[in-house]
Length: 530
Image (cartoon, rainbow, N blue to C red; front, side, top):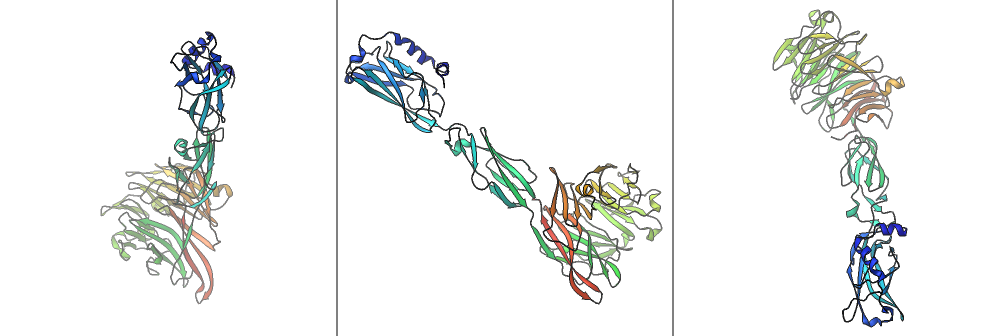
């Protein structure tokens, strides 16, 4: 630092003392060191920052043993052990025997010393030693404690820590470091102010610590763990169409080609295993649907009968709902699509509070086959034919704008929300308030088909393909790929606990009288934490 810079920062007291140095004594240098008494009257034991000037100037007063101020004595100021710099290497005491100097601390943190000596004819004599405590400057560099890449599982937590150094390489104490932590992708990891990181989703996320002008990142790599749940049953060729959840129950509906007949099957999850909850043929149709209400009551459709299963109870046909071909629901409302085979025309009914209401499906829908059916809320419903989709807003039906919007499937989250549908192989749409919006997705970009579509409780879609599935987060689309190859995967469903269920099967190689036996496996993939 230049002399001009030192003068610019010199405290007023030092400037006054130095200005008085012109009035020198007759012969102060000829005195004996034993005749001198000196003390630091200002600036001793200060605390400062390395490389910076102390807040107060150092003022030394020199007097005779008799107590008279000694005027005109030349003093030498020497910094010791990398103690920094002073404004002037020599000064002269004024009329009051005082002399001042400004001290810029050195670059080493810890105690620093400044020695003041009287320049006498017999040689320099040490008058006093000034001490200062130098603390590290603000962090200029950060270093991670541990690896720069942490591999964790969804739901895991880890506490990250950093060490900091200032611009001179001095360690910055932890109490003074106070780094600010932030995740650059909170859909994968979230961080609090103490560096505690919780993994909330599969993927990679950079977690950054910032302190002063320094920053450092650690990559949190979260893998999605997959569990396999083989399903014990006596069938041969399983095909799970869709999963359903509500009221603490998780069910799946599937098909089996058995003895040249297609049967509908239901499977339930106990928390530890999946098992067949409906005997073969109980839901005697290849087009069966399920809905599980918030109280745990399940509704399933057959060829003409509609089956109801109370929580923990067996499936029983319900004659009041006879003829429902499809079933959907949201909250406490259950909607049924009555088959043309039953009454000669399609109709839609709403069951809520024990009351069954005909929603009077208008022409031409009443005379057509409705292929897709989904509730957006307790008062909103979508019904789709091969070429059009109708919307019921709670009081009236209207046509969803758009040419050729005939969805083969429509799905909504458990309890309702935005309805999603797929046109053709992979054109994805979301339906809100009777209008459809096209949503770009990776499978459409790659020209691949969506094998199964599901929506989580937050209204985000999941798209199944043979090697894995895509799901959408606030940060965009992510993909999970299966660790092994399955003969076929058929359905995907995001559960309320953040895990994703996928049905898969593989060829066992066992040939029976009725054909080749396949093993049905339910996969639980942990891609999010709740």
